[in-house]
Structure formats: C-alpha cells, structure tokens
Length: 367
Image (cartoon, rainbow, N blue to C red; front, side, top):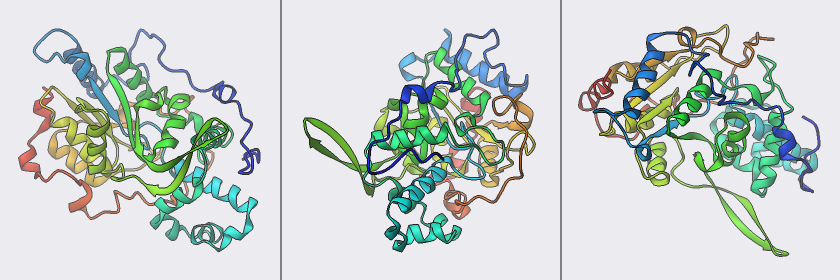
C-alpha cells in the first residue's frame, strides 16, 4: 500500500477522486437480475417481490418493506480473509512504522511474529488497537485508499471490485420496488460505512455494524470524533444482529439474506415476521469462479426451516465483475469465523425456540 497515510497528519486524499472508477450499479435494465441464471430460486425471488409490492393478499406497505443483508460472504468476498482484518493489519503496520516501541504490545508482537492463533482469538482487540485515537474521517480515508489501491490475493481485482455482482443487482432490484435495504454486519460499523457507497451503493445511515465507542473533541470551533478502545454492546453477531436491527430500524425485516452461522438470528427475525417474508441463505459451492466455503450447520438449519438456499454454482451467471480467473490458490484464512467456531447448539444464538416450535417458514413465505 502506498505510504501516503500517516498518523501524524491528516491524509490528503480526495474521497471524490477515490470513488471515481468504482462499480456503478442500478442502471435500468430490461432483465431485473441479468447476472442470475434462470433457476427456480431466481423465480422465487421475483415472485416474492411481485406478491408484496402488487395489490393482493400479500401486499406489504412500502414503509414495512425492510430488507437486511449480511456483508462479508453475502455481498463482498470474505476469503481468504475478511477485508476488515486486512485493513486492521495494514493500519497496525503503519502505526508500527511510525512508532517501533509499539512492538512491545501483545497485538503488535503477534503481528510481527505472524502469530495467526493469537490474532484469530483476539480479533476484536486487533480491530480496536488498529484504529484507536483516529477520527471517523481519518479512518474512512485510510479505508478508501486501501480498497482503491490494494488487490485481492487470489483473484487480483482491487478490493473495491470484490463484490458479488448478482447480490448487488438484487439490492438494486429491491430498492427499485421501494424496499429500504440495510447492511447488517459483524464487521466494524465505520468500516462498513466507508465501503458502503463506493462498493455497494448503500449510504452510511443504512449500515448496522459492530460499533466502537468514541469521544467528541471540540477544538478551534470544530468537532472531531475520536475512536476509543471499547465496543458498544451487544456485538453485532448472532442475537446481537436482531437486537440492533430492532433498536436501529424499529421494524422487523420482511427480507433477509445471509451466509454464516452468525446470521441465523437475523434470518429467523425475518422468517417469523407476521407479514409475508423471505429468508435466504447463500451457499458458496463454486470453487472455480468463487471461493468454496460451505457452512454445514447453517445449511442444516436452512433446510429444516425451509429457507431457500441460493447456490453460487447454479444460481449465479457471474460472481465477480468480469469473471476473473484465480491468479493463485487460496491460502488459509488468518481470522477465525467466530460464529462457525461455536458449538453447534450455540451457533444459532438468540431465540429460545426449538426447530419444531419455529416450524417450516417456507409456508409463511407462500413457497
């Protein structure tokens, strides 16, 4: 990464310039989902949207059309490592270059020694340490520079381009039908806000992430927000996603899409909505055009609840922009999927209802 960001001075980056060349989404197209294959799952999505937006027994008022999407692995690539982890490691290296004495701290020592186990187990501390003391504007500038200059290690695209094209098409399609679409992620909220518009076309007010506490500094007639080393609770994962959705939006979603064990509570929140609803699961089963990443527990829950499973191999015509070829094989991820690491009995989190009590939610969606 170009060494243009320094902690001793505000980065002189033009955000408008950085956004130039980012993917443009949402053009009016004859085919609403042109990069989806003509499969039953595609027809299912189109049918659901038609039923809730056209006059009839399943019509849902626009104000109630809330859609929630997970980020990593649902809208953007999360392998071989989460983008937020790559950013945190890059910022730690910047800080270490500016102040070598930081090498004595556990997080920096683990980074220097490439202690992947420590970094995995302490990923929350890693993220806090990386951006502590920065303003939101400084953090955003660093993130924008990174995604516009650094490339994905397996596919060679800029990180800005590593979005799932069919998924972003789906977001635009829902918006065109008066859905209010939110990104709900366990990743740092300010990270998701920074990439939301340039990568996904999602404004910051429609982002719900894991939030870090911050202080307000007033100096020379200006206000500056400064990040602290403290997470707001609950962390935005598993049950936390449902809590934060209800707290931030004030309505239950009628549409939810996720790909990990940590999304199960969010999917259930939508599936159990008294209004017509649809919960979808993305299964990464294509190791040629994408990156193979099955979540067996999530798939079992989805099958038991009747949540449709969207398969990358069968349902997506393309995966990433331009259908890039792999330039090298995938390396082992340096960060643990915290939800996948939980015992299966806990992986769903949150709702104290058994699968038999939940019932086949496919019936409620009219499928």
